[in-house]
Structure formats: C-alpha cells, structure tokens
Image (tube, rainbow, N blue to C red; front, side, top):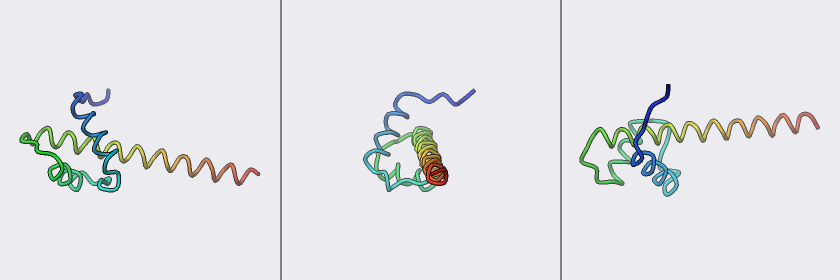
Length: 79
C-alpha cells in the first residue's frame, strides 16, 4: 500500500512545483527549507509532509522525462 496524503498536502505541493519548478530538487532537506521560506506553516509535520510530497513529484517528473528520452532514442535507432 502507498502513503495516504491529505488534500492540502497534495494541493500545496502541486501549486508550489507549478509556480517554482526550478526551486525544488530531489533532496528532501533542500525542499524542506524552500517550503519553509515560501509558506508560513507553524506545524513541522505539515511542512515535512509537503516537502516529502514535492520530493516525490520531482522524482516522478525526472523518471517520466528519462523514459521519454529513452523512447525517443530507441525510435531514432530503429529508423
């Protein structure tokens, strides 16, 4: 089973990645600092959940981009 995340974590995570795509990376601690700078969240747990979700989103995007690059490379190779 996967992790269950509340709506606010997903919504804020997606909004931050859309607004500031170059600000975040695969590093959780870096993302945690960036979330802390961008949002006023008093709860450490909520901040960490958002940072973790952003890290997850960045890893997924990189994986999708890598898959697209490999697919285009194999298509070129087949031609």
